[in-house]
Length: 193
Length: 193
Image (cartoon, rainbow over all chains, first blue to last red):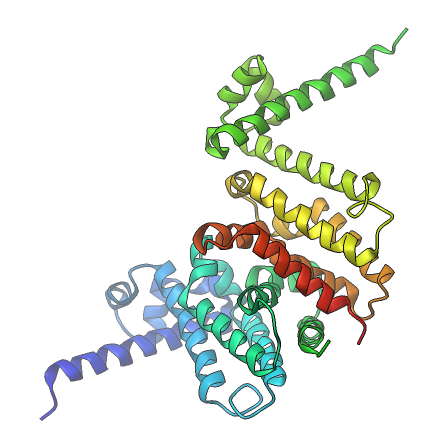
């Protein structure tokens, strides 16, 4: 017989994933502003109370939605196919990582903007640390020398959502041009002296 | 005889500079939180009404204080002595510019944090555009090829105040190490292939 606590935990996880999928669909269909607790409850076919119990507030829901995307990206670079995943040249992997982050910003842009985050959270969150460590690992594998932690911070700075959204929306720079420019930056930085 | 309007304009400018100096001294002595309209008025020896008439609000005063520092930096790289000013090698000038920006963040950090700015203002302000143009000019002079506008945006991204303050205050990274790392980045990017 299944442990009832185990069943409960599974139900909770399934419930949570269901609500996050509903929220992600709402963002895709009508933008982040359309994501209210009511709309998510209606979309997922549950009561509003369930959404509040699960996420606390709209801001909590938005944060969870971002974590969900970050987790998918982490999974892709740790276990997915190359060039993002293991097996490709480290510089190509780094380029693929940057491109993946940029397309994430494009898709999640409204969510990112909707979440009010303190600088501590914006720069110090666990997702960011995983990205930094991944970048340092790839720079090391590419035989790049120097103060790699700070170099990684500098390389990831241009991928920050608010800056990318400013370029896309206010300066009308196509996301592909931003990605190409970032690839150029990475190749310059990692090429042998 | 002096034009009375001219005299009035000069008085206004002097008055404004006096108030900004008083505010800057307060920041240096006691941090940005100590900069209230009352404190600035007291420090400059004028009535509180004068400070409100000149800057509208505390946030307006803070913005003016930042503009004042940006103007000084612009003056230094346009007309000042090398390596920041004209006459030095373009890469050395770019390195000097980054170091000047970083020390500005260190001094003005509390002010930067105290000003509530929208991303449009943070990334799209006139001061930022001057800095970008200056960077593109130096990259061109250094015979660097590519999408220089976007490369300049990427190079300046790690100098953004909120990121630098996070590194200094939360990660306890010395500002000199950040400056050295930025110099390394610039030299990698600009070196011939």
